[in-house]
Length: 147
Ligand code: DQA
Image 1 (cartoon, rainbow, N blue to C red):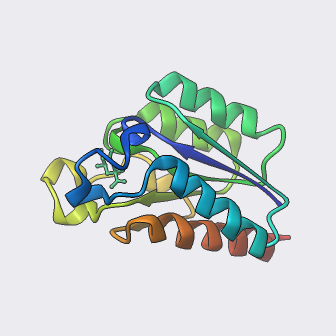
Image 2: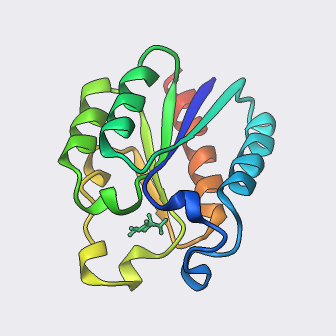
């Protein structure tokens, strides 16, 4: 069981970025917690990657075809804009779960639509770090069910 965790733009600033919305955990702390959780879920390899660049995230999906069983992504603002990321998910055919720290549906209207949700297995939002934790667990269950 090998999983890629992708973090999109501005998530490198977690900890200091609008903590009232996104909490005080840093990205390194989130990744550390995910590694610990992954061990308990039987994930043998968990790679984490963050990029502020859409094309880098597309490349990460393409590369994941060669080694990963699934992808957990917080696409940041690209959630709401990126047809390129949606097409990458469709193209690689790996199961993908979308996670957001904040409840995007309780925020500005432009955050209410996800370009990616329709090609993902499912989505979690509004639970802070636990959106990632629940998303990782759901992704592993989904992959095991299909095995
Ligand atoms: C986010 C929500 C997005 O709308 C926003 O652009 C982000 C973070 C979240 O985790 O809540 O960058 O994906």
